[in-house]
Image 1 (cartoon, rainbow, N blue to C red):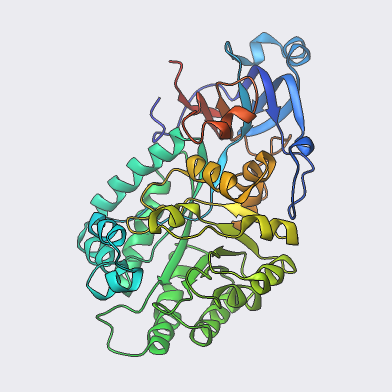
Image 2: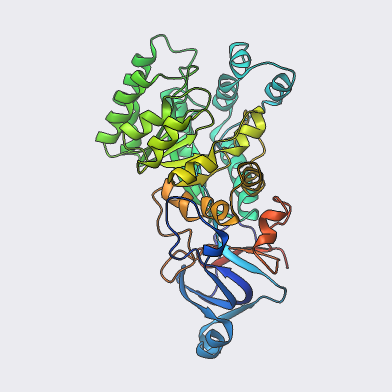
Amino acid sequence: MSPSRPPTGPERYLLGPFKQVLTMEDLPLKGPLRDSQLPLLEDAGIVLHGGLIERIGPYATLRADCPRAEVTEFHISEPSVALPGFIDAHTHSCFAGSRSRDYALRNSGSSYLEIAQSGGGIWDSVQQTRAASPQTLETLLLQRIDRFLSAGITTLEVKSGYGLSIPSELKMLRVIKAASQKTVMDLIPTCLAAHTLPRDFDGSPTAYLEMLIETLFPRLLEEQLTNRLDAFVEESAFTLAEIIPYLSAGKALGFDLTVHADQFTTGGSEAAILCGALSADHLEASTKKEVNALAQSDVVATALPGASLGLGCGFTPARALLDAGACLAIASDYNPGSAPMGDLLTQASILGAFEKLSNAEVLSGITFRAGAALKKTDRGRLLPGFKADLTIFPAGHFNEILYHQGQLRPSAVWKGGTCVVDKNT
């Protein structure tokens, strides 16, 4: 079955038996986790109905309770582990072109700023994305969505930000909206028009941001393109003083906020906290001060290990954030420049090894804690009434999933109560 086509068929399924089901029930949103805290059901089954989880329990009991005429059984013949569908809460998946030249220059010693100043960096992607037709961008996005689904991701955040003009930002967000109607994936669109100051804008950063507030924000609301805003707070983008009025204006209009924060220098996480953002993403440059401030706030700290791998820099201080009491999400940051891998499970596994994160902390970071970064509390746990989004791995124990560092792939993925990936057929 192609994951990019809405499925058809019976609405009630019985899945199982599973060696293990990780429900993530009752795990806290913030702070450290031990693997012994993971709620495990063994020899379990799951009943799905109407796109939601209806029941979870011993497989034999569910099978005896479900009349054969009312349920379609999806028998699991090999040892398998079921857990919530993964949530990738930070991607730039809508783009055209490649930045392989940037990657080569970085590995040869050029800095991020040097590459940007020489015509590479974000502006290179802006030019290529502006030149692409909406049809091309939509095709590329749908292809990437299929790859994400095959990797077990069932909710995907997608940013604009490679338009950096009113027409081009609208084009990108319209493409994301159109793609969302052609896939089973839940796409969460985010406007990142405040990615950097466009080189062809004749004015100051403040003037550019004011133009977005006055001209772009009304269009976003009118066309219902997104209810989320993002901004890059950095030396190469916007300062703390410049971005606070922009984020505050968006907040006043009802937009949810997220911030590209503390990637190379600090300041962005402060903006996220001051403006009441849902999340502060990157945080590679965060010090003890920023870590403690985030832990004392309701802002989700989102680590992006793909950017660390792509740029060859240190990782987000994930261990310190958790120990301080923060909510840690993990996302891929998939983009053509700094994070071209786009493999969430591999990146999360590597982050866990370097930052000494428990499997419970990593898996929570790509399920219900990532859902909190998107204000999606109806997914990320396997509980009655939650979205029937599941990722199933061919393994006898959940430890195998991260042990293989992304090389163990899902054998099946269920989205909204229907099987959209089945590698056994």
